[in-house]
Image: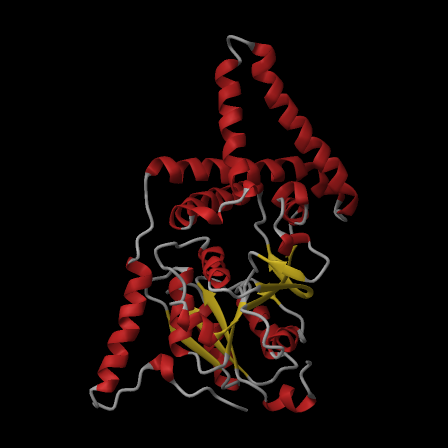
Length: 367
């Protein structure tokens, strides 16, 4: 079932959530792409974590000329807290998360709703294509689109529509989000994968559609990529501890690689041949992957950074995983339960008859 012209003009209201924190360089172009959607019945919730640059001023300027834009505060400053705040305020029937340093084509929302109108999906997402400006950034974008870099992360390189275990910047029926309790604020990164795990555990399926493309601004330096993936690795431990059966080989392999590299370094002084052999084999592997990936990189300056980009992803994630594992931090329910309790408290207050209506129970808007 596809959206009809009347659906596009007055169909279900779609709430677009955009978490922000100091996104001055990119927020305007992001908002322009969202407001240019063919699906006109949208509200745009920009949830800001206390930006100190001109992000808020720019959003307020958009809101002044387009009432579909609203600026919300996120005092907790994290991504899951921003998403939960958007859920509290959303008036729509569906929620689509869009990253503040990304853009989407004009038919993105329409394409998402086409899938939801079939009534078959718990979540829908598209392909995240990296874009960059520097030579290192172009190498990073290419590495993110390579199976050698990201393994089985279909949303980075998939070309066929299929069910998946995770979708980037996902879209969901708001009833599903509220039923599952929103995003877990005890998991500040990797919160999207953890939420998708709960969607699937509830018996619903996630759809990946490669025609729904997201142009996503990558890190512009290899050092920045390493820091990012180190953070991803630490957060992955929290998700695995909460949901042990969510782990797959591609989540664990970077930690195995780091352990093997560390063991080889320790072995090298006594037994140089086997000790250095594994290290040299890995270096040869990322060099070979760089050579295979290079023909698809338009910027010739970027090609020399490809091996370093692969290493930053693998080693950064592996180190972060070990840090999370050895640090002993375990996820607790404080973030998720706090949000749930806040919603319950609001609903109770409303039920006592003081005239306060719970935010999450607002009537869904129609065009």
